[in-house]
Image (cartoon, rainbow, N blue to C red; front, side, top):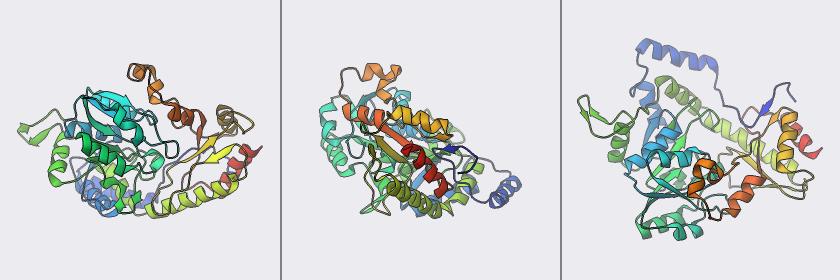
Length: 366
């Protein structure tokens, strides 16, 4: 093991000298924002890499979620999952909407389509599922429900960069898909995010909304926000995209090593494997079951005492936060609650060595 702490994730950093050359270009151009050269270059490169037609870059994923709801003019109630990061529900609240939490599937921990219909009311206008840990939602079942009730679907795809299904990019599903490029993500721009758009008209509206609602220099068409990505963030993204396949391959190797070393540990259960090419290995969650000698929280502390910083993603449930209690009282989230009380995400990032992985496993085994 190294002498440094082992964190649950660390950003992938390309060679510094390459980034310095990009910074020099930005300095020389004196264009720091407002859809400069690197901003346009990154949008084009991401469309090609992700297999999508249109994408709009944002300063972060939360602003992108807020804008996605605004762009589709969502009103009333939005069905979503309690098992996610709070930004999912916060984006609904920031639009003056009501989140309706629905329990998750026990295998994928994604929004359970079998429970969605019972939560639909006359006020429901949209569904916001999350591809949790980068694992695909049952997109076909969700779309069938949306079509039946004339609902919009906005996917929180913060974890799902580069994830595919049998027909191509997972990001093509729904009316919009929203990505996060935060430093903890598989692909990052320090801070950043994006909305995947189905057509040029939608992209134009979203581009206007993220720039205060300006249509031109004298016309404001809506109550927009400042969600633009800077040139420095975009340049970092352009550079990192060159190395993304290498980073994902390294994550895949770490995932495989964890599975091999944990397969005989009583009371520790891994989530099912995903086919190669259809996952990005963004997280490595384990279930700490009752057969394990100590509780999940005791294992969390034990790892922390050894400078290993795992995370209880997602604990507590969004619906258990005091500010969301009024939207969840009396509802059954037993599957999500079980996951929130058992899941521990172990460290996984491209620079994590096999030696450090084995150290983590030794602590779990000890």
